[in-house]
Length: 319
Image (cartoon, rainbow, N blue to C red; front, side, top):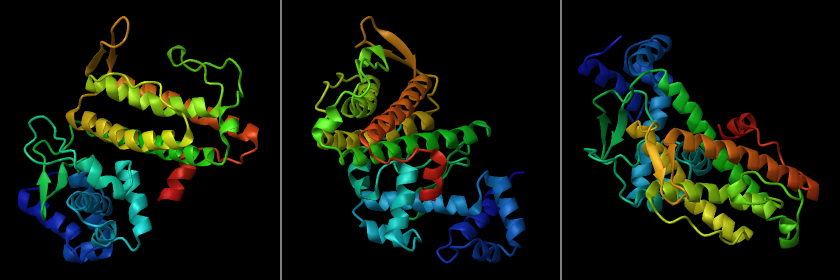
């Protein structure tokens, strides 16, 4: 089912009108029942009315934060009842807290040849995005190549966000251990990947959890690989908060360009090796999940009562 421009505009107006914060108000604006309005809108755009409104409002908030808005002002302008609820939603969508938006989005990154600023855009199945200062932007191809790709993209986004949220949780819990306990050998001789060396302690496991993203981002950017840095908990936390938003932005950029099959030739390897970008992301997520559980086993051995790191629990708590 397709819509002409006027009909699509009418539906979008009903969803995004400042006074239509609920599905009931949206449907009233469109002179339709809630069921009929939701079904018609979802068939035409591939997204529910509430989901599209929430996403576009977050995109607008990200743009506002980049241009100097306070987190509080952006939160209430986006229709959230509390700053805390807004912050949770923002972290889920972008992978970093709203307080970091000005720094991360202030880099001026653009897709090659992109006709408009898109660094605040989130993945969309219909190409509809917030376009500053008060407009929408609809990508020419509707924002999707094939519909089945979008459920997969949503799963990937969940995995990426959970990995970062869970790593942040483990770094916070690790502060409850003193330096000796973090550095104590728990699993003698344990090696996860040969080139990363032994990972026998909490500090070493958490260090490689952070370092893996630093290493692969350096390879993608053609930069020198970072040195094997200090794995002290304060240093690790600073490094993580630096690499996390860059990792999310890189994955969003790969997705926007449809570059999952692009090949990275890592000349810093000896000998040089080729890696498919989709495989790189899968590699990082796979071994990140393994290391997060490994860190849990070590923390429990010290006596810390840590959770299971279940994405289902994370999803419920952050909804």
